[in-house]
Length: 320
Image 1: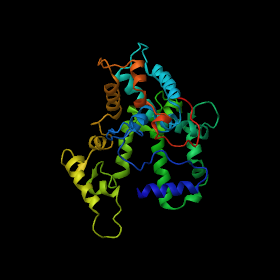
Image 2: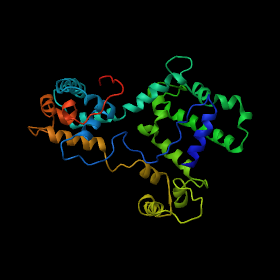
Image 3: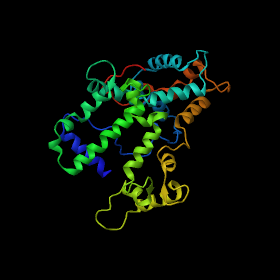
Image 4: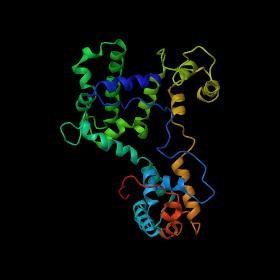
């Protein structure tokens, strides 16, 4: 979005201000890393490995000997078996896959935590976040005399505070790691979904009528600056708006229709992958997997040097 580039440049000019979590380039929310794609028929299982391990960890396994890969896989199976009954159900496998695919979220929070936890009490208060993010602007308003700059900061600060309060489930105005994760990555938490929808509406609804019409929908992704004809992909997006976005055919999207657009519910990637792994490895067809069944089909779950499609590692990774 054009606005995104402007705000990023603005924030980079203020050294004390961190990049904003409330802006996003991509509207439609997908499972992290796990995109819908066909499973390959040539037994190269790379999609399965990345779904089961995560992309980076899959590369790590590609450098191991088959024996080392199977040994690590055995330990992973023990962790997946949450009820310790000796069987891996589709539900347990789905939970594991979702956890793996969201690992990047928690790693991101870990990287920035010390930037915001100014008093080192292992919580981040709203005042700490506001100071770390907006302190330079609040202390030096004269450097942001441009009306557009002022508008951007004045709009983002209360929006961040509203999001922070929603993430702060116990209402103590201090976020623990889980609450701060919900604040920085609201799309990953059910209780934050309404905020994601509201922020999307506020970003796109330029006339302030509480809806997104077709022109606003297009303007969010295409700046018609030269006055020439619209590209074919824009025409396709207009058709998408009419056919699939505007569900009640009133010429605009309300919050329910925006939710349906940015949070599609028609396909559960983790569920589909879990079912696939169980189906391919369930030798006795009891719809559950034992550790032996998984280790028998180990090369579907994890790679090794023997699979011959790994990449050279540039850094070491901890074991899952």
